[in-house]
Every structure is written in C-alpha cells, then in structure tokens.
Length: 253
Image 1 (cartoon, helix red, strand yellow):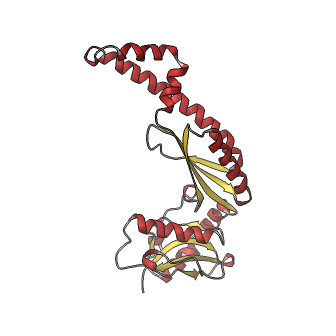
Image 2 (image 1 turned 90 degrees about the horizontal axis):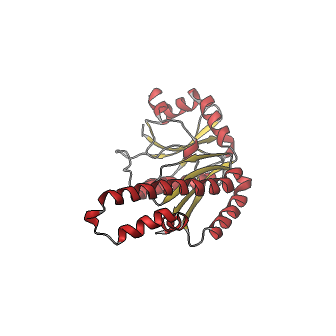
Image 3 (image 1 turned 90 degrees about the vertical axis):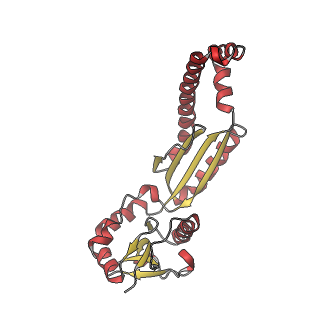
C-alpha cells in the first residue's frame, strides 16, 4: 500500500478524469480517486520521503491545481499533504463528506485573485514632505547641521515621517479596496512584506466577474503609473479562503 500525495478534493461528478492536470511533483502522474459518497481526490503516488518545500516542488503543486480549477471547483490541499493509502483516504472522504461539501460550497464558482501594491522608491517620502511644510522645514534644518548635533531631532523627524507614511498607506489602501472590494465576495489582508508595501490582499471573486476585476486593475495601473508597482496574481486556488487542516488524514489511519 503506497502513500498518496493529495492535491485537492472535488465533487466526483465534476470531473470525468484527471487528464491534462498533471504532471505533479517530480513528474508524477495525477489521477482521480473516487470515494463512496460522491467526492473524489486528486492524487499522485508519494515518494518514500515527504516532498521538500522547494520553489520547484511548490510551483508544480500550484500549477497542477491551477489547471484543475479551470475544469472544476477544487478544494485545495496544502503542499505536502500525504495520505497513508487509498483506504485511509477513502475513509476520510466518507467521514468528512459534510465538512468537505460545505467548504466546496463556499468556493464554488469562485476564484482567488491576489493584489500587491508598493510605492515606487522615494514616492511616499516626497509626497509626505510636499504636503507638510513643518516636516519639510525640519528636514531642511537638519540637513545643514552635523549628525552628531541632531541625533534626537532626526529620531523625531523619522517618527513623524513614519506616522505620516502609515496615514498615507491607509488612504491608498482605502482607495484600492474601494475600487476592487465591491467586485469580490470576500477579501483578506495578508502580511505586509516591507515598509514600501501599501497593500497585500487576496480577493475571492466569482468567475463571471473576473473580467470586471481585470478592467479595474487596468484602471488602477493607469492612475498609479509612476507612483506604485502593482503585482496582480491569479486566478489561483483559493488557499486563503479555505481553513481546513490536514489532521483528518491521521484520524482514519
């Protein structure tokens, strides 16, 4: 009995086969394991050791799921989700059928789109100083004096600029989410990666509204040209809107 690498779960009636979804990790063939109660899992044979979390392996996992979501609604499993064997996986599909179906219903007909926005170098500080004569005057005074004599003043200026930057980030974030938010059913704020980042957001969008979202992103890119760098990702499996854990695999072992 060989272990199985589990990519995702679907309604069995939604997919006839897994043709064209693979290859998976290390070129492994992806197949469809049908359970007894109308659910199925996209699986591949697992190696002797758990797959390493390398960029290549994680991209293979995500790419296979991206192909799958073009054909059906898929409940994505996290990278390196392993089932001990077919019998255990079938038992999990049976025991947790209600949980899986509820999760599938929550993402049915929907895709995840990601947006990252960051100020271009120097933009935020220039705008802050242009809008605040007091800060600009403080900056100018400090530039004409030795650093050894202005330590505390420079700390004060840094804190004031940081507070103004947080306020500007809030204003810009509100403008972006005001444009994109109405096109999504849900959104989730993700981790800010650096001080230049304005927004890192995942949006759960109905498939039929993807073109509207694309158009809104084009408008955003036009209005922020020369001011922000934008990264638009998707459609991708809705990882950020699925909260299931892989503990259920061990329960049926």
